[in-house]
Amino acid sequence: MQAVVEQITYTPFAMVCFYFIMSLMESKGVDGAAEEVSNKFLPTYKVGVCVWPILTTINFTFVSERNRVPFVSVCSLMWTTFLSFMKQADAEAARSAVTLS
Picture 1: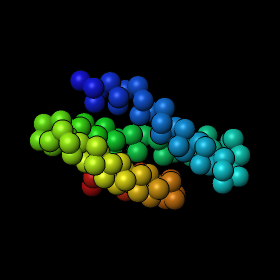
Picture 2 (picture 1 turned 180 degrees about the vertical axis):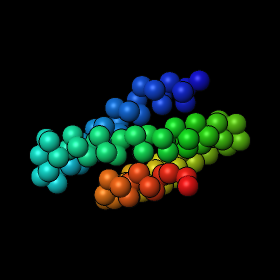
Picture 3 (picture 1 turned 30 degrees about the vertical axis):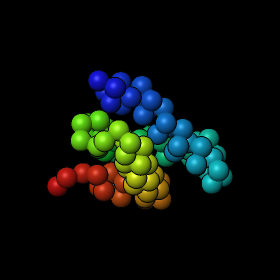
């Protein structure tokens, strides 16, 4: 249940902030940042909805309590790498990267 609540409440906010603020830091301006959010949010969110509930379930079902933080840390590192890939991809490449054809 926690994974579902997180995917509905926190994840969209975090992804929008990531794309918007990173675009502003690249001097794309507010319009460019808003365009990047509109192009990349949905493909990234789809991947997150598929990945994080599974990882959370694995973490709380199979990983011992003392290893849960390291497990989530490794998963977060991989997720941050994916976000960096999506950020650098152009809009069409971002959509096609997460589409199963």
